[in-house]
Amino acid sequence: MTSIQPIEPSTTLIPEKNLGKTLTVGIITAIFVIAAPMIIGAAGGNYWVRVLDFAMLYVMLALGLNVVVGFAGLLDLGYIAFYAIGAYTAALLSSPHLTSQFEWIAHLAPNGLHIPIWIIVPVAMSFAAFFGIVLGAPTLRLRGDYLAIVTLGFGEIVRIFMNNLDRPVNITNGPKGITGIDPVSVGGFSLAQTHSLFGVQFPSVYLYYYLFVLCSLLVIWVCTRLQHSRIGRAWAAIREDEIAAKAMGINTRNVKLLAFAMGASFGGLSGAMFASFQGFVSPESFTFWESVVVLACVVLGGMGHIPGVILGAVLLAVFPEFLRSTMGPLQNMIFGHEIVDTEVIRQLLYGLAMVVIMLYRSEGLWPSPKHEDKIAKLAKRSGKKPVRA
Image 1 (cartoon, rainbow, N blue to C red):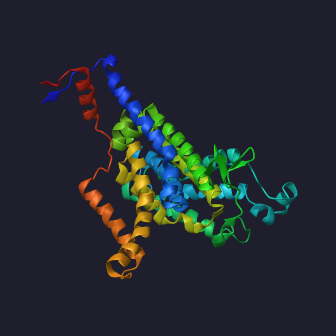
Image 2: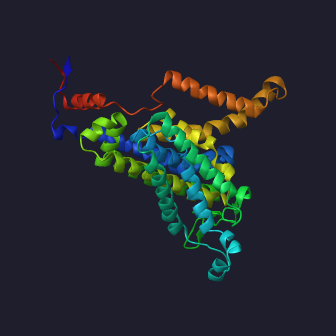
Image 3: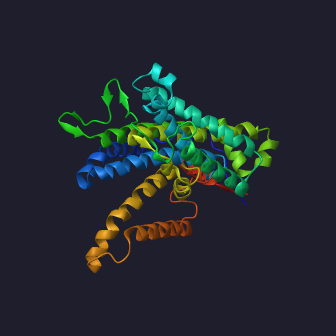
């Protein structure tokens, strides 16, 4: 049997050489993130920068779902509903739609509601968090497949509501969606326009990329703080053994509701950003398939591990578009014409890639390090060796 000697707190500090290495990696990563749209835009055009924008949206969504699935161990198949709630909240508060439907709103705002984004975002996050609690409250006793079925139903209910709330009172405009949504604008600086800095042109897709990166960094910071807090440890306890967590005095009811609320709020943030970016929302953007993709980002990246989830989100956002753009030209180069529909090949290779990853990397591409490995690594840094008992 192997036991590991306890390590004094002073030895758990990061050594100077490792701190320097971490700082170097951080600086290189920051430079790459800042330069990414310019590099990708020069190589592939603004289309690929737009793909990168959606990758950042998926990062926020995946991190939000990771709170529920990865941290608390609660399987949620309807997470895209909170994305929809955030998007429609932003759409209704920053477009002329409600003004055209309700006379009393038209008297208050004849030109339409054009509420600033810095007000819309907290409202969208609050609405999404509220509905997260609404979903979580009746499902507190459910686990596994039963919880998955209920959350799947919730996601579809929200989509169907959005699709049918155009009569007798037109709130969501039904399947036609809501148009004319204001772009993000702060102090007259609109992200929908091209701006220049030191002679360098920054199109709208570049500016939205930087905004989404800032939002993603905020979500990463909050998730990291939560993971290492008392709440995060309570989520981990519930994930491993809910009965034991109750026995240790953890209020599992409130802790699980908090997981649903926090995860949903990040979905609301993503939805608000999506609506402002697109300028248009419709129920077609919030299908069950989107929930599956976001869940795949978490599972394939590494459940509970923030860097892994980010990696999974970026790969699953970029990989399908890469296949879409290469399969047609590749067939033309080999056979002289397309013998199989490009979309069919894309879906086939996309599914095959996920199956291969789950076969050979069942814990994800970048799984969370095990607790025993962390202790052994700290022991190695301190110069102490495990003692055989």
